[in-house]
Amino acid sequence: MEDKLQCVIEFEELVEGNLYTISITNKWLEKYRKYYKRVHDINQAFHLYEIDGKVIRLPPMYEPPTVDEKFLNLYKELDKISKFQLKEDYFKQEMAIYKEIKSYPQKVKQWVKKNEKLGSKDYACFLIDYLDYDTDDKVYHLSVFFLEDDELEVFVDRDDFKYTIEFLEIFNELYWV
Image (cartoon, rainbow, N blue to C red; front, side, top):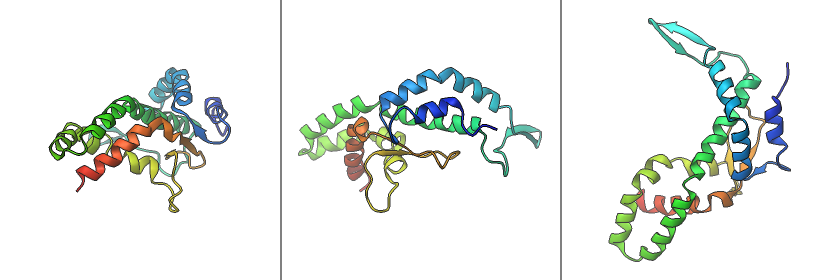
């Protein structure tokens, strides 16, 4: 049985080491989008059980993840962080606005309220999910966690999320007081 799919090997060989940019990640995601959909659709038919007259899908018990499941997890997690990056231009714009109004408490309250959904819901766990991985505070780049493959170590360049991180740090300081 093969240990890794060729597309996963190709992803690992895209860069020297384990630091990826969103641009590189997005190209790989686009290249394997149709393959992901096909493998995903096939895997949805596995591990189906009838319980109380309803068919539900449960995770496999006591089985190590297959190479397909590892690929699906890799793709899903990279796609997730890629989608978070889509708001980077918005966060850059919001940081410019914040810097102009930070001395005006009423305007800052309006700014927080305007961004409440993004900061407290959509991106609430972003900093914890991607930047809370080192006990020695040597955190810099974003770490992507893969449930199905604990050997795979992927970091995404912090510069690709510069304004997202800056926005969330300020938003959290203002909102969660």
